[in-house]
Image (cartoon, rainbow, N blue to C red):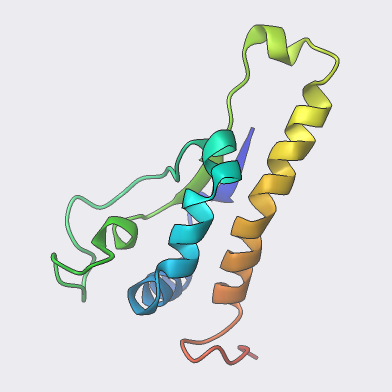
Length: 118
């Protein structure tokens, strides 16, 4: 099961990178949280091989700025898929995904100053 941003629009990826460049700490806290790591391992998604346009290659947050997709996933074994508690496991994974979506929703509905976009 998974979720995230598979093909964000140019405007969305620009806004996400802008936020990460300004303050990557909220994203770093999300993806380093024990519940996140236990459930998803790490943030996945296609990445640029070099720095995105407008950002220096030595930017302190270049590891996050290079993402073109922001994906979360959890795999299940055949045994887990056929177990009676599969829905509980999946519900927990979706609950643990929620802080990521809350953060991204905040970023994508505000400008770089935190002012809601109309």
